[in-house]
Amino acid sequence: MSALEPFGTRLRRAMDERGPLCVGIDPHASLLAEWDLNDDVAGLERFSRTVVEAMADRVAVLKPQSAFFERFGSRGVAVLEKSVEEARAAGALVVMDAKRGDIGSTMAAYAESFLRKDSPLFSDALTVSPYLGYGSLSPAVALARESGTGLFVLALTSNPEGGEVQHAIRADGRNVGATMLAHLAAENTGEEPMGSFGAVVGATLGDLSTYDLDINGPLLAPGIGAQGATPADLPRVFGAAVRNVVPNVSRGVLRHGPDVVALREAASRFADEVRDAVSGV
Image 1 (cartoon, rainbow, N blue to C red):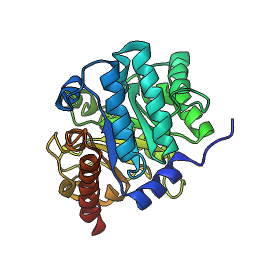
Image 2: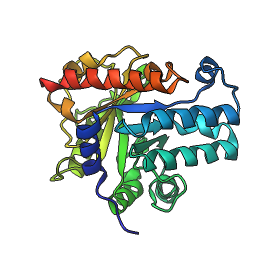
Image 3: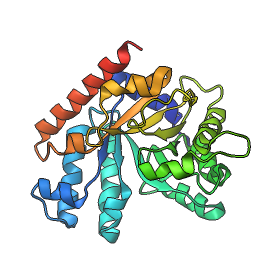
């Protein structure tokens, strides 16, 4: 299997050329209804095709949420496969938001589903959960290195329930979220222009100055838009690491559909606001 150029290299280039914005593809029932689409496979396909048409040739990253496709069974997964293929063909990097996490051969199988180059769901990166222990991700780390793909590891998530695990203090005095960041920094040591192993860190979390976010890798930041965070918040939340932040916007852009022009204009506004917010840092 011939490896791609490392994900971190490709992501840095896409962010510099297209702006550091990730748009989610989240076809949940309420959004389908807002678009006057039925909550069925036909509506799913129309929604996904429209988002890809509007965004894939201009945003750095598209992030399909696999659950919203999986709920329709094999036909929904077929729509997801086509969406990933078409998004990548148009130049967007695809981060599959599947949050997989397991041990041993099962983790390896999850990784192969999304990070093996001949897989129907092959994506540029995958979100993963480390809460069976960071070492449980080893099969995914190994395959990502081999294939030139990347991982985004849940570290400091924007949901309030996450704190009971991520803020728990270990025997060494460091909390679990900080431990995950340290693991990722180690994975990315020496990589230029940045490593391929990123963290998911919520843009809604406020001051994170007590955490070392300088992991020499990307920081996928959900929470912009509908969850209440704005691009202007990014420097305060992420500090000097803001240059490697990939803000994720979903509903804030998608609610402007199904009109392709309106979707593009919304994404462009967010991208411009992010550029303005991080340009002086």
